Length: 155
Image (cartoon, rainbow, N blue to C red; front, side):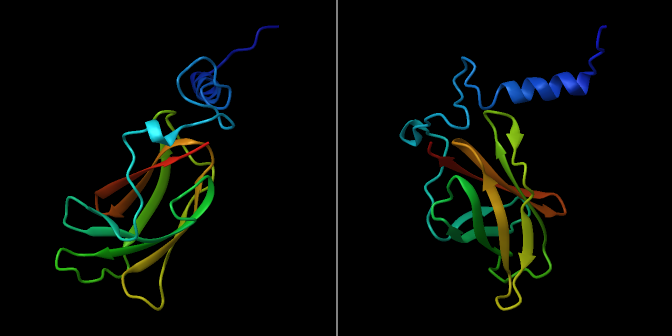
């Protein structure tokens, strides 16, 4: 009996083959060593690290637990302000961890919760960085504004 493979099934299998096995490529698997000292595309985490979106919105990471962001679940506190540094309330934010070298995100969706005590602050958890390597933390704000922070997770 022959099994018919669909294109989505083959793509899924191909993406899984690239992670975790080390299969002869330059990308480490989820339990292999990754030397962040050799990574030159990441940013050094500091409290208040900032990106400015195309519409002038300022996105600052005010806290990370753990700090710097590490392997596993992370909790971030974002401060979102306009160009005049006024806090933005009711921002529609989506936060997505993504591994550009592997072409995949995290299996766990990050939840964004607006602070009830600090205007313009948003808690994001869990930001799951489940394997070593370069991770992008992509923050999308509706309408059509995006910033990307890049951190290396050692293994």
